Image (cartoon, rainbow, N blue to C red):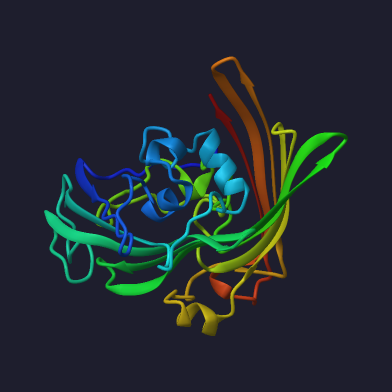
Length: 304
């Protein structure tokens, strides 16, 4: 991944992730999101490399490609799941004034995040991944990652074709391989440790601030193409969803996004090579007095 920046500044950070699988009124196999496991009838290892994720197996990619719709669950309960992430952070030097509001200069323990997910089928060809999160460090509630997608199947030139659209609020969160910035390593970092001030716009710079619509297709289980655009949500909408719109970069008009990837399985070996990019004209800090900055982020990923 060429657009990722590793966190620095912490001598040691211990993060303990506790996944609480809350599948209402029904027990299911262990899974990263048990509401998906109930729908597919498969454990977490069927969809995720290593069982926990976020990297996806072939089955997991097909499940996401087809709109989070798989199997025929006969249930009356909502497809809900939950997650709690807690941490203890020690930094080499104390941070004068506190590592965060309401916390001390060092050796801070916290319940970082408490999330609830709606994850699964809405209609036969429509599904969703919707996360709402309470931030235990900033002490606020907000709408987190969202990916709502519709998918269908057809054929071109006698070859299979899966096509669909994704409505989401974080560029690359809808990615089929979960190898793009929204899912990049480190999957969880400390909320108390200092982090770099610079990063690419596509690497979380627009997360939850925007709304985007992309169209995608997978031809012959080989060629994947996706294209669409993102626009900044109005201030009132962001505030309603628990997002602070101050100091963010506001997109002028719409920012095009594109993704292409080739994949191939040879015997027991799997390969995928992809590129992705975002092109945006933005007002830094929403300040229109000096015009826009033109930012073009390009990335590439290789999976084996």
